[in-house]
Length: 467
Image (cartoon, rainbow, N blue to C red):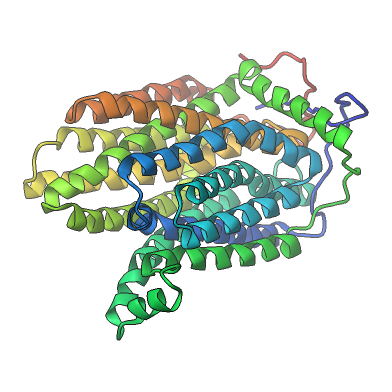
C-alpha cells in the first residue's frame, strides 16, 4: 500500500506545503499507548454517565419529549457543522490544545446539565457538547500515531494501540452507564440523602443531576492530564491570519482524500455503514426492551443493561482486532470480517422482531452483542489503514472527515428508521447497507496486504492515487 496524502499548512495568506512535524520524540510507543488509553477512558467516562440519566433529568426539569428531541438535534447539528473546521484546527495549532479545549467545553456542558432548569441553558449545553465532540474526534488518536511514527517510523504497529484505545472508550462508556444509572438509585437508598440534597440546594441539585456534576469534575481531571501528559514539539506560532488561511486548506485537503484515494473511500464508507448500524440499534432497541418488559420504566433498566453489555462487546472486539488482522492476514480482510459479523447481528435482530419467545429473545440479545463485537473488530483495522495513508500534517482532518461521514449517515438513517413501519424492515435495511459496504472490501482483500515500505514517502496534493 503506497502512501498518498495532501499536506496543506498555514502560511502568510496561503497554504504553503511543508514537511510534517513529528510529535513526542521523547515518548516510546508503550508509554504513548498508555497515555492514549488513559485519555480515551477519561474523555468517554462522563459521556457514559450521562447516557442512563440524560433524558430522565431533562424530563424532571419539566421538558417535554419534543423539547428533548430538539436538544439532541442541536448536539448532532453542531457536531456535524464543526467537524471539519475543528479537525483542520488540530492540524494547524496542535492536538493537545484542541483536545484540552474539548474537555473545557464538556465540563461547562455537564455543569449546565446538572444545575440548569431552563431550555435555553440546556440548549447551550448541548451546543457546547456538540462542539466538544467535533473537537475531540481526531486529536488524541492523531497525537498517538504521530508519536509512534516519530519514535519507530511509519511501519510501526498501530493496531494494538488503536485497539486498546477503542477498548478503553467502550469500557468507559460501560462503566459510566452503570455509574450514571446507579448513583441516583443509591442516593435514594440512604436516609433521605436525595431529599436532603434537593432541599439543601433549593432544588438546584437533584439526585438525577449528580452524574452530570460528577462528569464535570472528571472533565477537569481530563484537561489537566491532557496538558501534562501529551507532549508535542514546538510548532510555528499560530497567528490569526495563519489559522484563517490554514484551516480552510486543511478542510479542502480532507475532502479531497476520499475523492482521490480508493482505499480512503472504503474507510469513509465503512464509517458511514457504522453510522447506519448504530442509528438502527440505538433507536429501535429501547422500544423492543419496553415491549419485552411490559413497561417503559423496566424497559429502560433492560436497555441500560444491554447498552453496558454492548459497550463491553465493543471493547472485546477492539481487543480482538489485532488478532483478527493476523488471522485473516491483513487489515482489509479484518474489516471485511467485522462487517460480516455486524450484518449477522442486525439480521438476527430483524428476523426476531414480533416475537418474545425465549429463543427469539436469546437470538436478539446475541445479535445485539454481535453488532458491537463486529464494530469493535472493524474500527481499529480501518483506522490502521487510514493512518498508513495520511501523514501528520492532515491526520486529524482525515479523522474528522471519517467522523463526519459517520454522523451524517447516522442522522439520515435515524430519520429513515423513524418513518419506516416497525418490524423487520428497518433492521434488514441497515443490515443491507452494512453488507454492501463490507463487500467493497472483497476485491481489496483479494489483493493481499499492502504495507508501505520504509522508503515510501507521502505524495503531495494533486498527485494521482490508486483507483
